[in-house]
Image (cartoon, rainbow, N blue to C red):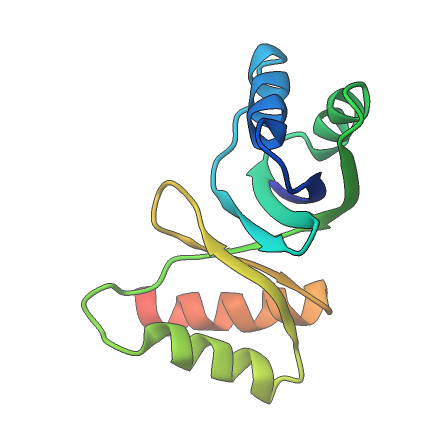
Length: 131
């Protein structure tokens, strides 16, 4: 899975065009969100084929500015504070979380500035909380 970072014009129909374009090309959105920032909106969506999504969106003049590898992390819903604890582990390892959202399976999706180091933190977390 990959995160696609998209700049959208902040006007009616732009998100619809994005969703329709990906849908007609059989590219499923597995999580994500859109955040307004003045005249543009910044979107992050989880997809299986980032390059293909970028190519299809370019055809309708929607710009994918970056394709990111993601860390997919399951948090324990029965333990309050899991998000804070996981993010603290990343911070203590000097890994900056650039983007965070959930997928359709209630898993945490994070884009980090150091993917390899972030992956190590994530794997240690899994071993501690899920083994």
